[in-house]
Image (cartoon, rainbow, N blue to C red; front, top):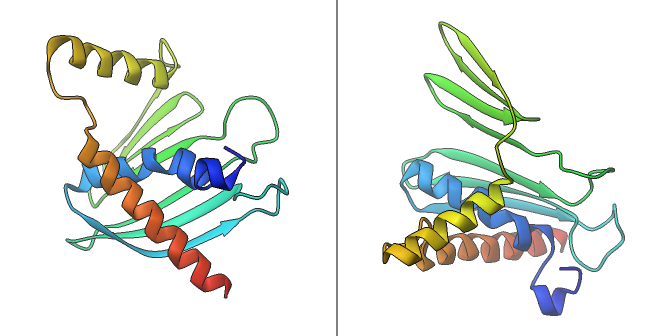
Length: 159
């Protein structure tokens, strides 16, 4: 993951597909990368340790994906937030917060197992049943193409 020739990038290549795929899934649209910035200054590695990507869906829905490898202790500083006209859902530190114009609901609790293990179990279950996977090859390709475009835009802005 730290060798750009072997990995093809840093945290954007490694962690970015999850957020980008979720954006594409939730909007149901294709998307365009409208901006991107990368930094490799925090860890001093040859690949980026922070990236932010700005997106616009074909219907004009905007998204921001931020990923990084700079949390100063074990674990993560993960936050997922989806905001729309009528509601916002935020997942952070084991708490899900649903906010609407009328109310706010907070549900605390960690998942029973790491989400990556749940995703792997779901994919293997689909394979055993002969069902399509939750995220197929085309889904992965769409996310990778957005990542490639983000790297191109970030390289241009650096000069």
